[in-house]
Image 1 (spheres, rainbow, N blue to C red):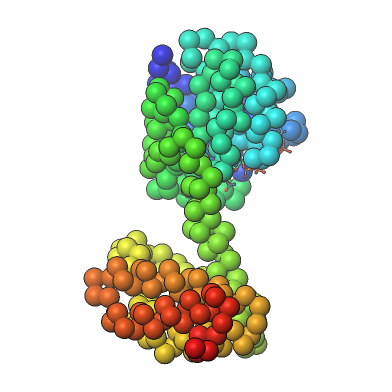
Image 2: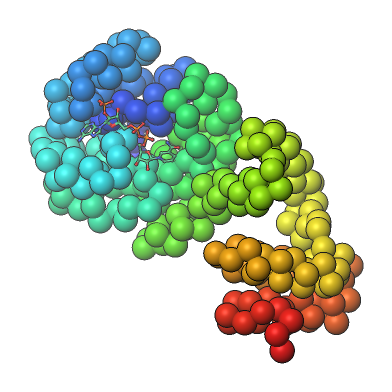
Length: 305
Ligand SMILES: NC(=O)c1ccc[n+]([C@@H]2O[C@H](COP(=O)([O-])OP(=O)(O)OC[C@H]3O[C@@H](n4cnc5c(N)ncnc54)[C@H](OP(=O)(O)O)[C@@H]3O)[C@@H](O)[C@H]2O)c1
């Protein structure tokens, strides 16, 4: 049976993601009917920002007042929260329990499913900072849905109400999907952290380094948006400057630690991107880089052969 066109939405966990989604959906005409959280203070603060949102004692009480309940607790608490749910009022499959974790498989919601609820995953590809600006910045992002039937359709409408793009993920794919998504979020920060660490060797202050790299990253993102990943690739690999890549690998090996290994792994990906450019660099240059990269990754030096 389909859900109502504006199902009542409930939340368990009044954190950063829930506050943003609830505010935007409420403004779009979806009733956010109930909230429960670990602390009463958080729940009351959440409810105070919304019209007619009830503060409930626990997840089961939220489910009594909502058609779709979003479990927006930390990932490690989703299973226990779902298992404690008592769904007394499930009728004709019109009740759904949904979590928002990227990595957690849907089978943590099996207890709710056994009580007749539809289950789903709803993962916004967005970093919620707990700021009011989240509510506007989320527009244009993508949200990955794992659900079937009427729930999939309704979650797709909820994605559109956020001004976002829906993506569907096949059953069982969440762990790989989420591992890959790190590269666009926390691992991008890790790349910047490597820049700052290496520049500190030259005496750069961390603040100066960060001020320098953030606009570079923003420009790279804009270029990728316009030209795609191979087209946006810059730097020595994109030009076929094998001599520079080989010297930098050797320098980073001399610095010790894992600096050369990280540079080599990312350069391997850069070579793959360079080969996809409309005008790729000469194959001979890419082969020379690849050879040096593999020597580093095999534990020998780029010029040790
Ligand atoms: N933040 C992001 O960028 C982001 C992005 C995509 C997906 N997600 C997913 O969204 C979910 C929520 O993440 P978040 O970042 O919003 O977390 P968060 O800001 O840490 O908020 C979690 C909320 O859950 C409440 N809570 C904790 N344990 C609870 C329990 N056992 N029962 C009821 N409430 C409990 C917290 O308690 P209090 O009552 O003490 O406040 C807090 O309000 C996670 O599954 C996460 O993977 C987050």
